[in-house]
Amino acid sequence: MAEQIEPNKNSQENGKPIAVLLIGRSGSGKGTQAKLLIEYMEKKGYPDILYSYTGNKIRELIKEENKTYSAELSRQVMKAGLRHPAFIAVWAWSDNFIKNMKKGVSVIMDGSPRGLLEAEAIDEALGFYGINEIKPVFIDTGREWSTKRLLGRGRSDDTEKVITERLDYFDKMVLPVVENYEKNGRIIRINGEQSIEGVHKEMVEKIFDIK
Image (tube, rainbow, N blue to C red):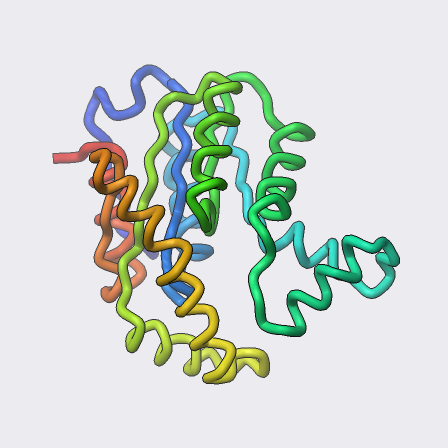
């Protein structure tokens, strides 16, 4: 179990909602860290947390029983090993926001944004809901490390070709987002090539400014 860390007295700002954007290469452990972060925040008194994972919504879209034209095109994108355009990703999390957002809710976004246009849309959406404390977190892992991690999972769809395409996409589309956040002094960079507990500890310390 990850070490429990006590935030300092100013870290929660009296329950003010925050948004954490978890960014990282495939295999960096974003989903695991999102779960640990949610558990941590719940124990520390955050009243409600909305989890947003674009992948779940897209999987629903491409189900075979969905006969819409959008679903047909989306299945073609998936089969070709390509990534969906930004508007699909924005639809996936914005639909979740519209249906489930409440006053005072904090947000954990897993794997978003994946492009500069989406990053702008996220800032705008969170501003609309009055969430101004936005913390982009980059779980930093190298390509070689990520490849070994993905191949080690033993999933049938984690072939070397598919993994290379995912990592190429990240370098081309997502790294510019990280660089833009960094240029504006917004990114929280985490060493992803350590234990799950180590990543969680570093994330919590940096997100909540624990000395």
